[in-house]
Image (cartoon, rainbow, N blue to C red; front, side, top):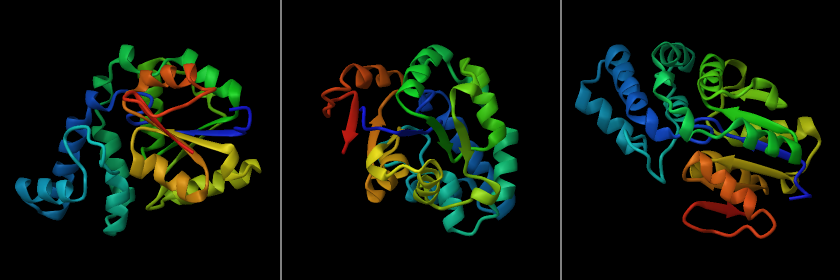
Length: 219
């Protein structure tokens, strides 16, 4: 880990337990498709399910925002809609990643928060789990001028900004396709967490990381 010069960490499902509000988030996506694209409930649910967006946590789950981008949905409109309907109050602080752990990560290398969520919702989440925004060297949201169907583009831009190579960069997230795969394809490393607090297990094994039921470490 001494070689890690930059850590890029996800928010949804990584800083807090996605199971706290994933059903609520899924229902918001369904209502959005019903209200603005005139699908009925069953059609909207099937469209989302067919594209790996579920009302439950799953290993192959993908980002609703990235899916909407790929289908040319007005994602600026979607950002505003989900910010208005985001159920952040459902997040349970005791299950979330602690500020102490995030401080430990920030002591290893600059810690950049990279999320497909909106900046408004980032503030809501961090306030809900009791984490200061100052812990992060930078907060990058996939909105407005940053809109991208993959985090790879933003990850590459962030690494260039910090002047570090992919080999020196570690991505931490809860979904392989969304958070790990883009970094691995760039040549970096990644950790996929099943639950936020499992980062503590990873930090304990930091000198000899290995795959186990709690997390997966990809070189």
